[in-house]
Length: 229
Image (cartoon, rainbow, N blue to C red):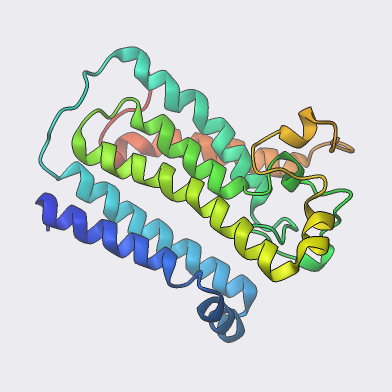
């Protein structure tokens, strides 16, 4: 299915797949049925599949140019994607009860928050950075709607999660858990509220490098466009 209808259908399916499973009652039931790890694996698998469909639908939507392409624009996603891969690699499965993607929540130490010290929403910042960087070299209407929508969804998602957690935890517990974290990346480091301790996890760095290299190699065959400048 192609054209604007196919694009709208794919976009609606993607948004619903994120809005419905993240509702507290639905999430609790799914986590109870499949376990926290099973829920997370299923959520990620469905998200990736629907994202692939959405990108394919955007590629097949009518081309309506908004701004001209210039070769330098490809540098933007190429510089952003290593950071995106690092954020995801350090976030998935790490103790973080303050946002999506965390696991082993009972192991979270507010005094040593790990990736939450960089930002308590690393997955959502990775999504926003990925989308914003890819918006630059894709100056047609369909891709502008696609990537700008992801940026808006990620940024609004951070605010919604913070509001929900603050209400759920209460002011005192919220203040205790978030004392050395920040919504804006590195704000807690710049403000002196958090300092990294010890060496970074080399295994997660290696995973980020492998994923980045795989995305770089597969972008052309799968998306149909070389990502290299």
